[in-house]
Image 1 (cartoon, rainbow, N blue to C red):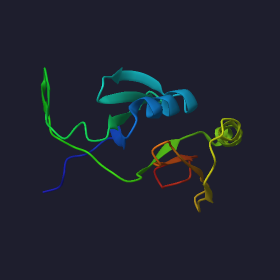
Image 2 (image 1 turned 45 degrees about the vertical axis):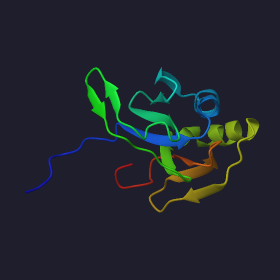
Image 3 (image 1 turned 180 degrees about the vertical axis):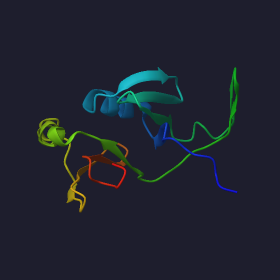
Length: 139
């Protein structure tokens, strides 16, 4: 039996040591819009199509009861990686912006399909990638 179709990644989560510091980076530096938050986590809108969840490390180790049901425990450690999509025409603007805001670019990759990726770190040492189309067959 084949698995039913999946459509997209709706949300992805990072675990952070200082939620306020992480929010300041993702909202202030990267311009993501805050759409929900409490003492344990923050949800940020990524381009109106997906959500980046920032969880205070160690604060989601017990089930979370909500009016609609229970969310099972989860947590993580170590530097994680994720990529954000940008338009090809915005690549140079992002390079200048990161330089002007003091965010060092750690790596740059030109992909065989024509895409370009820039890599940098967030305050919790997670590897953030911004990538133009041409990274994968589907992007």
